[in-house]
Image: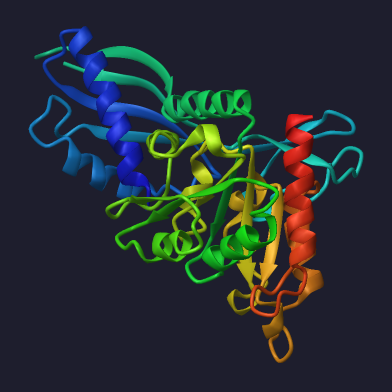
Length: 115
Length: 222
């Protein structure tokens, strides 16, 4: 649902970088999005298309790489990846159940492809 | 053929929001004002819990409320009736409150005369969890009729809160809500989280909520 707010920020950021590099057109945006984020690829692209109309980023393709959810054990410091439906079970190394979320919520713009 | 060039950006898109949220926390801490963020689905009892909190703690703390609502001002009017300063943020369709919105709301409040500001976030278990509001503590309210499977469907919100308030306990009898299963699901996501049971209607359990809030505020400014 909040794809719109996020895509507004993505557009603002890529337009600034495009302009600073004298790019005529932004053709692709490489993003890294955590698995735990509820953002859907299809809606991100749809909102981006809507917002970017008549800008240098019109028609840009979002290339979205999903990054895994990483938990770390507060007892033995072991870090491990988990799937969304197996979140925070227990530490596979020491069996401890005091886990912290180390990664999986990020929304990162890696780079843009421009002409 | 035009050549395609790669420009590195390396920017976390929620960074601006996080920076502003940290600024809000630092500013309010300097003024000894506690900012509490309450989130839940629509109809779980956010406004009711806030009204109960005002009546229980209103003599100990000077309280104000920031209301996030998509279009209406109904909740702000209910709060304002108690004489508590309330700012309504009409989000105009946005599904969450973020740090810039909270910052602008704080600027409309008499901060020199306040000890506690409560944010009633937009009724939604998904989006508000993604945006740091600058609050010092966040709570999620889950009411019995919503069912015990919410931690499975909306894990993120349970990992970002310090307390879960199970509301409408008066509906437990006759429902198939499994309290033990719910507690287990929440603790699996967040072992440190506090879980309390209340009924805003009957008043049961509200003491454990207000004493948690009082202790948390005291611990923050000790």
